Image (cartoon, rainbow, N blue to C red; front, side):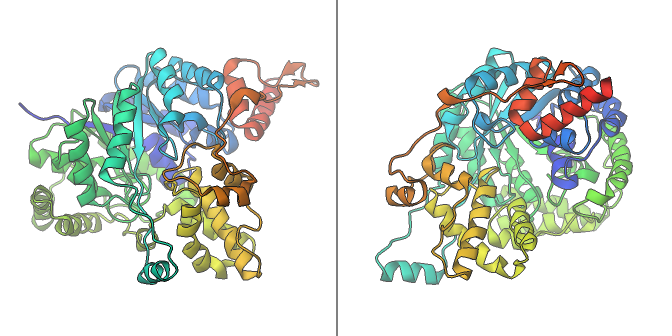
Length: 521
């Protein structure tokens, strides 16, 4: 029996978010939707993440309208998928079940079939409500276990810890940790479990271990999601495929590689050589890619990578013999669990096709690329770029103090900002944590959920003024004000979808909705 691999295309959401700051307009998307209808992807991730915020903030477009227009063209030819941060939905604050219910119902009615649900702390309690409502309204719950790594401790760290009687923590992010989270999600009703490597820090060997572990112990399909930033992406996807993963996430050629996901065209070549069917119309993919090249030129001012990949059509173009051998050798190395060789051959393939080189800074720092750029931007804004190394060195300690959270949005931004603040404290002769941010206080309190290791009560008292954890309590939640625009004689939000935008993005939605109502007059 021929094995089939399902493909979730990320181009219209994670692809453009990672590579072009989520600036694709509705007009640009409309140009490629007819080709997407012919492509036959298992799923297309088109919504969620930064899309609803960005289309209002930068493009003055309605995010609900975007979803409905895509659904009108794609219909049942591919499942439309969205990304949700569990109780945080698309925002940065926890929301009540009432808001989560309304959001899930409207998203599914507007065309979403699969909701990928994750929590930045891997706290399963934070995704239970979304799972329940997604399934209630007929959607599939794709629950993501966020990959995380323990802080790297230098030899000096270990010596100092031993000398002063403060032993370093035991590893937290083990096989048992990840499998326990996956099993808890499956027990809550997950239809798919995703290994979500948002930073691209999951190396091929570890990918193989986790995929085998999940396939052996879970009943639902397993999806693998990663990025190419530090250079592991393509090799890790190959390892996932060789070890039996059911679904992989890819982007299309001109929106792939670098900070984005691996290219489906390269995955197609690997699968063709291994006798694995994708059930994707690659001629339609080539038509999409031709349009994406023009769109990429239009988005050049937001292009993270700048360099374009070498033109290639995997259906019609012949690969040079030496490059073809790299594909074969990479497959053989993956089957032997030889991580070094898989990386060697995959890097050679990516270099030939002119995909961005691995970002060694991100790999060595072991933090997401977006977190690094956030720190750089913060320090530049205050004229203290000289403190970059200091701020980076403080991240492991800040993270440990806060309960060792995975570095995922929005937590990675909270840790980044606090590390910068602590660096400034030290530089100015003040005690660290002299001025903790409101978000860091909320994290330490427990308002974002349970951290992988408990926060020291003495540290919580110092930062938040309480010793005991204080979880989020929605009983005092107050809905956003929905004023009447006197000069227009209408309410700012006139229906449930607009009310939801106002709840999730108060400032951005207020400006957007006011513009829309004014334009309508």
